[in-house]
Image (cartoon, rainbow, N blue to C red; front, side):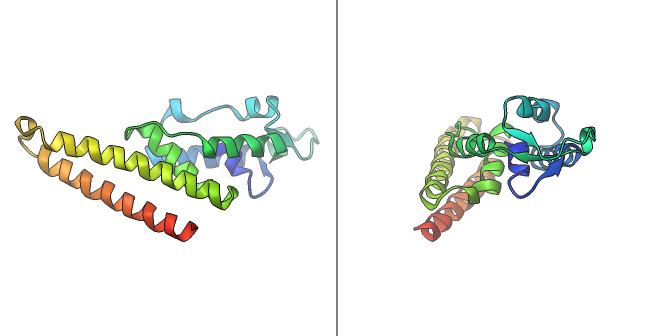
Length: 166
């Protein structure tokens, strides 16, 4: 999704796309070989990315998002989220929010609702954990309360964005 989204604004070189994807993922979830994603060559092979000019420049050739690539990116953006606060979910949410502008108003609203629902599920999980008083020794309760504060802020943020969309 990151590689396809990197091409949404303009044609770019292979190196430029690879560097942006690597940089974005590293800043969101930290360096991670398993999250670096699909090869740009595979995206070309699948017809999601196409070469603008093929002057035997290798990595210097400009690449652009194909119409099929745009459709695939939109499908990624409309895809369901998994529950939980995994690093992969964090990355998917960041990518959805980064490229949400390519969706129409109703689709943007649907994605914001889905993200908010995921945060509500996280809030319920944290509240349940907070009710397990036998486990709340040390600093765990403070940590849960901090997580609850953050998830409540994320829900508020989603609510504000949803109101703007309507």
